[in-house]
Length: 249
Ligand code: 13P
Image 1 (cartoon, rainbow, N blue to C red):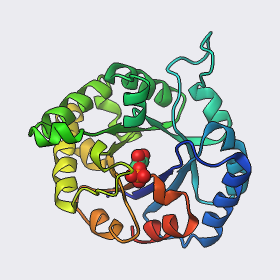
Image 2: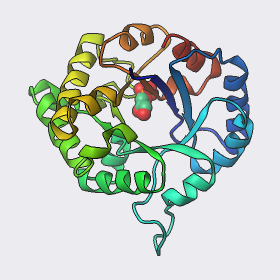
Image 3: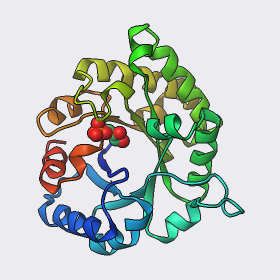
Image 4: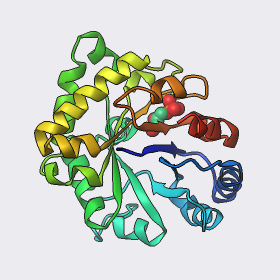
């Protein structure tokens, strides 16, 4: 069966020094449970300090973005190989904040996911509808388009990646999807994965929920049959709330 994954997306928070303190606190407070993996995704500038703080621990390191090419004249960008060199196991791609602020399209997300896989990183591919799209009854159509576009050509490599369903209206708003709303979306995504890569591969692919996950709602979300953990924003910035979420998985 699928193991659970709880990953912290620190976004643009924590300097290297602050990140090392937070990572150390998470490491010291973690109670290991079989079948539950933990990861943190700091900003690029904190990767090395956090990697050092986590060395020898079971907590994996992830990044928040990458460029689709291995190297080149791309000022300000970072490649998969560079992330790998710094100890990253995971990399988030296609987060809605990047889709919105940086104009990332499904095609670009697809290229980034491919580059990550090629370098031996596990992409955490984010999808999710806006409030307007949900209210217009378009949630499943939007997820279908994003999954097909972002995972084009990856049908035979589904198990090497992680999907994160993050309804845009739930991110940083305190409005969590109900466990039923999230489960419906996750089940839809799993059906799409089955159509792309077969039922067995789809059954083995982890689908995380993200969007205002907190210690008091995590257990209900994580107990849904198609929810395999969470991608945690705000609540991952404090060791006690992140650990409470991890321990409820
Ligand atoms: P919040 O947990 O702050 O809503 O953020 C979710 C998110 O965007 C994780 O990637």
